[in-house]
Image (cartoon, rainbow, N blue to C red):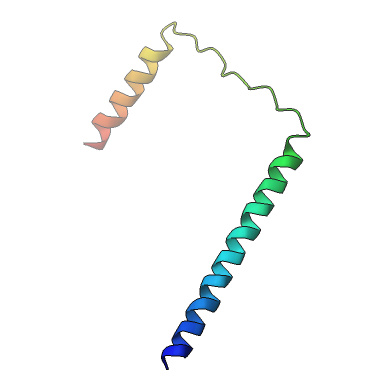
Length: 69
């Protein structure tokens, strides 16, 4: 009974170890493959105008909060 438990444990540990090795190989291969392509230029967020838009948004939030409570 003890040897059967040890065998099951070793099979399980071997399976997990094999999966982890496979995962590392796949991730390394993917990283090598993706290095071939140039990185996309970052997209900058559009500039917000602060000409009273923030005040209007704050007023809308205040009205919504007052209607809830």
